[in-house]
Length: 100
Image (cartoon, rainbow, N blue to C red; front, side, top):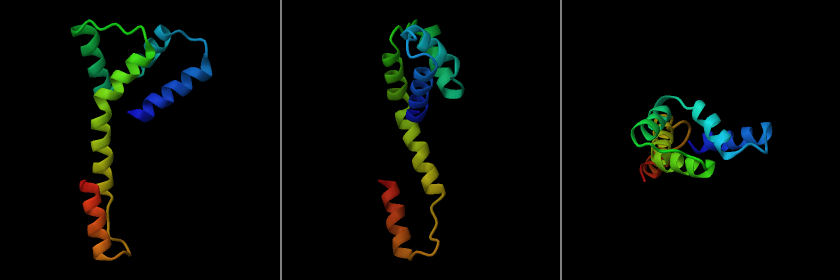
């Protein structure tokens, strides 16, 4: 999620460095999909949240999804872990590091 937030900032700054926070919130929310869109709909429709500050919105997104993002990255690393040409001990050490 942090990569997505970074890309949104980069994109918005490049197309319109003078865009208002409201415009940024609208644009970013229109790009949401999957779990992020479900989260957004719940915030807006059920909690009545109105974001008028883009930084607040991106902080809330980050705080909500950072753990999910981290778990997915670690799961991917574990899925891709293999001994290759290394020793068994090196493989076990790397495996344990990923568990921490």
